[in-house]
Length: 264
Image (cartoon, rainbow, N blue to C red; front, side, top):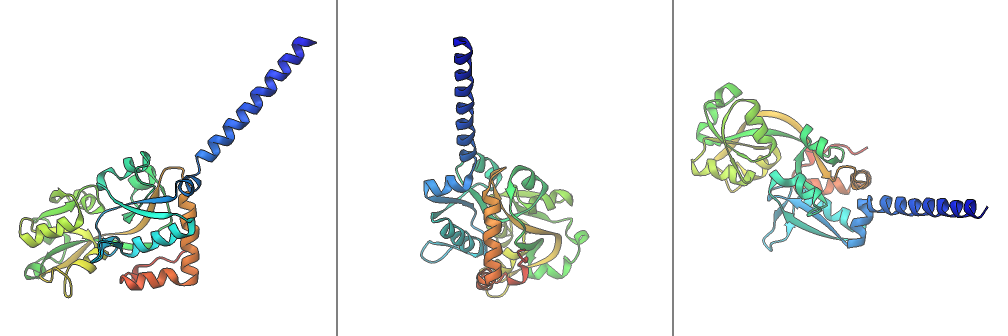
């Protein structure tokens, strides 16, 4: 009888221990609680107008930056922006160097398989940027095939260059790719349409450049750690911001309102 009682007590202790461990594991798996507990939402970005860029005072602004700040406020935490190597974005998430990639990220199959992604929030395209003087000569994909391109490493622009068999050089950022064309070291670059609207043409820093051929159509999403509950949380927040019109107001501020995807 005594042996049976001891065995029963041991079994009960093991069950309680396993339940406690299970509860601890469940708690640890919540990114939302993890972020609330540490008091910061660390956002991985690159310098990418009009999504994330610095104002004259060195503060990060842009459509993505402003929306990330709104989500941070809803979580009751500070938002910290960290510039990352775009090639390493998945590793940065997994290492918890950052909590989210929020930087006009194209929802490619590679991204969606490696991250827990939100619903799409903006439409976009990959476009070819060339000097104004050459624009009339480059209207189709066949026209631009002989050019040397600059593309951001690990970007949708680089993938477009690969898919089309273009000769290209990888650089650190889309801004650097534009600079390559402006300097004449590359005949063209491939960047996001939304960035092209902010960076090249009349009223920008590169008035002598323009975009011509659209190589792809795509959607932007926000990336979290695989299995993270933060993606669903952000989806719910964006839906609320769309419903109350505040998301549309931020989009107008940065000229991306026509690309906005309805949040349902």
